[in-house]
Image (tube, rainbow, N blue to C red; front, side, top):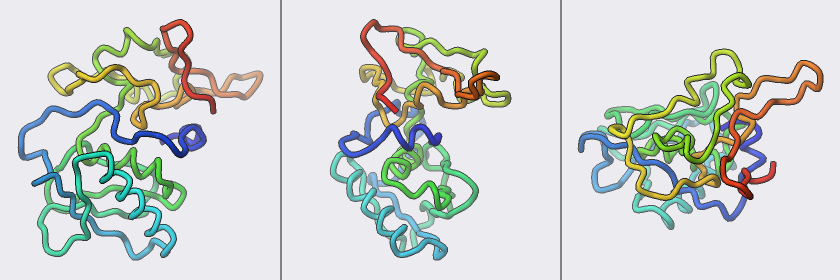
Length: 199
């Protein structure tokens, strides 16, 4: 998540909305159960936040998160540089990075949603019906964050959700204006009266 997304999300967000990845059965977690390990580098408080984020996801999704015993496929949650995850199960020890400043419930939700198979909402194939991407405002090297996915890659039967935990905010990866030094909008809603949640 971007720093602005960290401000955007708070209590009351439904973390399970998003675009699910189509894939073969080998990319799915067996019995919708995700074994995980937490790095010993996390503090007791950080571990508590991560575990409580799992509890919230279990209440609204059809997944269970269990501490790994000897399962061959598992999430290894570690504090590397940044917040990121593979999309869907890749098999074996699967790294999910939560740097110390990423340990907040909404960031955990976002990255775990990737790990269980959800893509970004703003990358769905029909997104141009709902948002306009301002490519000229995107930071150099960040265009991949706005590439549309193929309809062969994802299942997007749900209504487009501007408030999804899997949708970047309107300033995500925006370059800074030379004069004001403020970030420029990279995405603009197309529906009259709609806007991204306030920052």
